[in-house]
Every structure is written in C-alpha cells, then in structure tokens.
Amino acid sequence: MKKILLLGGSAQQVVAIKAARNLGYYTILCDFLPDNPGQYVVDKFYLVSTTDKNAVLEVAQKEQIDGVLAYASDPAAPTAAYIAEKLGLPGNPYRSVEILCNKDQFRKFLLENGFSAPKATGYSFAEDALKDKASYEYPIIIKPVDSSGSKGATVLYSENGLVDALEFAFSFSRCHRIIVERFIEKKHPYLIGGDIFIEDGKVVLWGLMNCHRDSHVNPLVPIGKSYPLQLDNEDVKHVKYTLSSMIEKLGIRNGSMNVELVVDKSNRVWPIDVGPRSGGNMIPEILGDMFGVNIAEMSVELAMGTTIKGNIHEPNGFYATHNLHSNKNGTYKEIDFSPEIEPYIYRKCLYKKSGDRVEYFDNASKCLGIIFFRFPDETTMKSVLEHINELITVELQ
Image (cartoon, rainbow, N blue to C red; front, side):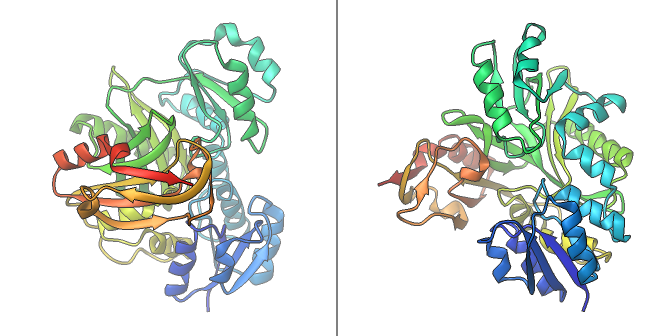
C-alpha cells in the first residue's frame, strides 16, 4: 500500500486525510498540537511540528512515503515542498513555494517579473518602521509577512494608530517580520478571491469568487464568498492572464493556489496574496459543490503523482458561504437563523456548542462556523448577503 504524509490535522484538514483513505492510501500525519482531530482518522500519527522541515524529513524517510501534502496550510506548504524536493516526490519547487509564503519575497518577485506590486517595505523591528513613517503614502496596510486570513493586518488612512498597528502585526508573525505597503483601492465592489487548481502547469479550475467583509466588525477579515464573480469579462481575462503568467514564471506544476487580487480604477491587476495551498474557510468544499468535483481527492491524487479522475463541470447557479462570527467576546448560547433564509441554506457546519468561549472576530480563526447557500437568482443572493447581519443572530449567554 502506498503511503502519503499529511502535514496538519486541524478540523479543516481532516477532509484531506479522509480523501486519502478513500483513495486507498496509508495515511501518516504530522502535527504539533497534541489534541488535533486528524490523529483519530489517520493510520499513524507523529507529534511533530509541520514547520520543522528536518524533523518532518526524518519521519518521511523513516516511513518511506510516496507523497506529501500540506492541505490548506500556509505554514506547512514550504515543508511539503522541501520534503518532495529532497526525496524526488511530486511537488512544486521549494524556492517558489517559499516566495509565495513570504509577503516580503512575493512583492520582490512581482516587481522583478513585471507584475503590479504596491510600494512596500519589510521590517524586523518596529523602531525601523517608525523611522520611515514620513515616507508612507496613505492609505497603507500593515501585516505580517508570514500570516494568512488577515491575521495581524491593519489599514491606516493617516499616522494615527501606527504604533498599535505595528505591534499588532508583529504579534502574529512567526519570523518576527512585517510589511508596510500602499493599500490599493479597488474599482469593483468586492476583493477577488478563491482557489485555482493546477494540473501539469495549467489551470484546470478557476474558482474565482467575490470576497465579502463585515465593515461593522473587521473590514479586512473575510466573512464569506459568493459566485458568480462580479467583474466584467475584460477584467476577468486580465486576472486569468496575470495568474497564468505567474504560475509559469514560478514553475508551479500541480495543486491548489489560494488567491486574492484587485483591479484598480485604471484597470491594472494587482496580486495581493497568492498562497501555494487550498484556501481555508471551506473554500474547497463550496468549489467542489459548484464544479462537481472533490478538491481534497484531486489534491491527494496529484501529490501521489497520479492524474485527476472525473470531469470538472462549469458552475451553474448562484452560490455563497458565510462565516458565522461574533462582534464581541462571550460565552456561546446559540445561533438564530431567520426563516427567510433557511430555504437557501443547504449545509451548516457549526464549530461551537453551548457554553463554549467565543472571541471577537478579528481574524479567520475566530470563526464560529460556516453556512453554505444556493440561491435561485443573483437578485435574491445580493439581497440576502447585504442584510446577512439582520438575518443571522449569534446569541451569547
């Protein structure tokens, strides 16, 4: 039986473990959390940090694995690429994955390869960033170079709050480095985001969607996605061309990439973040529903060096997800869904039970659950999503 090493056993990564088992592979898991749910699903578990490349390499060599996968994990993606490169297994270039996982290096790559990139500077110390404050062109965004889900990110329209924003960004950086960059104003109502899927160097699934935010809680943290993309055909072409060119220059061959882009008022495409892995917040699940495929199984197949099975169908319909969240700290009681929206909900994934601690929603990890919608038309979808906070109530004790 062939063996696959999976890096990360969180609730959102269990789907990949189950997919590997369904495909008949022996599953091995590395995770540094002793209470991760993935360990109860795999054949063998190692309590090893997924960011410790050499420790994971030892496990891979000991187990004589046939493939390695970091599903929906930014921190583990470079480790998976490192292991694959060292052992001659299917994977993407380690150097390219490193670039995509570090905002500092990614901005440098964009500039050197002719892509639009905001003016940006990286810092390892807050004092150095404060020395340069006179040179900042507002609005700016300050964020860790190595985080995802908008963890540690702040947009500033003036110098007010600069010290706090720097401290906040540093608190979320594993390598203690942040980036200060010009904030790009978009011409379209929503940030462009989602996942694309690559096989043999070509994009075979364009899972581009509208990224929704809750300005009343945190205007930077994603609260859901919707489809179809609200962008004109010419802009969609430019976005696809930009991503295809980037994939070619980086030498990315296979797997998912989580993307965020903006088109500005002069029609320039700005790649904001591109991660070498599937997105969080159950993006692969809704794309699977839309395209009629199993993204986790596709990821496993390519990690094991086999071709994708099944046909990818173009979506037909109006889909959305919503990340359930709280605007304050407290103790969870229940979530009330208006009868008006129940007919459009086809799946509920709730992470909390009565009595659990709930935290203010300042990053994606504070999500209370995710609901999936299918709407009959775009008008209904827009109406529901625009009034979502009135239609869903998070009740605290």
